[in-house]
Length: 329
Image (cartoon, rainbow, N blue to C red; front, side, top):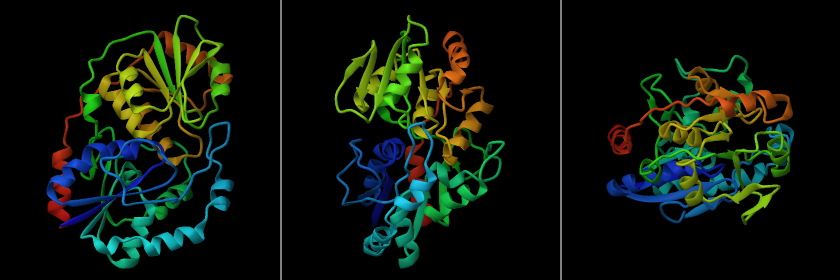
């Protein structure tokens, strides 16, 4: 049996799940990996057979998705050509972690495609939803990567199609401790904007920003600026005081598993993160609209009185693989 595992490379969440699941699929079948999206140095289980430019979400310096640029600056002609050339016919099953080119190719070629992403269950029953959100954008998210079959991840098993978060082995093996270091991972914010806020916050804390704006590590006014490194981030999240991050599913799930306090700032106009933030807020996690001087008092309150959500997610990766293969082959 041949399986194509197609992965979206926006952020690290989709790739981190694949680190855990791809070896499990490879034990049961011949496995190839395909990726699309922005360049990403996050390690994959094996070298992808193909990387496509895919569909890009453009962001503004203020940390929101710029939908005007997103709509008008993507190359739809190239996207269509890539869909036609995508080799899905060579496989018995395609697994899509929100990878749109393979999903569309499967529809055109009549190949079975199974979704395996938290986007798949955003609008399903019992899932917490924001008080206000764009139903049009939700339709766009579903249209961009269309799949009729699938499963989704979420923090709680809100319904029968929802799976527990995939927690990587390197995170499971961490012996946690607590220092005075606060980690910041807000990839849509500029480094200097973040540093300007930090200067208004308590001096006794050590601050470390992880960014994809730089390939080296350095300091700005006493703030550590680190390039994205899976090894370094995994080491620091286990010993940090807390983490200030966007509402990406994987990073928030890992913080929950480790019992680390979070201050969550969802990317503006990013509907998946809005839904994640709504679920986290329901669990008592502090959520803010933006990381700015407008919320400096709330940020200070969180620093002085952090609360943590701790859920010891079981390793069910083997059961996930078995379920997908027994019900779809």
